[in-house]
Image (tube, rainbow, N blue to C red):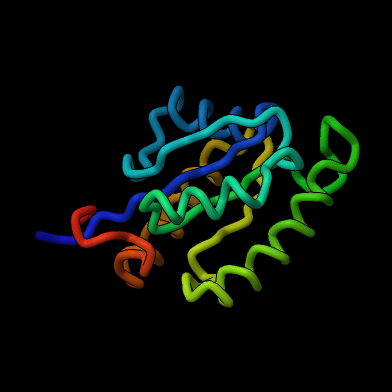
Length: 139
């Protein structure tokens, strides 16, 4: 049996969720093992949500939002950058690994880019194997 990663993707409503929708309506293929959670702004993604995703068995987590300078809430994605930097260090300290967290910017018109980011991240996580936080019964 081959390992299929569980990936949680936190998407901003205005841009990256639109990109995921664009990918779907354009029939652009990307791995189906990603589970999307929509936020109004990537700046609202609390670091606790990311840690909780790993504690509940996620092998990788994506944080996505509007391109820098294009946030509908002015500076939400700048907050996301700071949280990503904090989380990257924290995940290394926890032994999960910063490579299991991805930050990506996609506008609503970039369905192909969103699909590409998901494919690339899925391949990376597949190569890393299951998260060290994933329990034996989760396999």
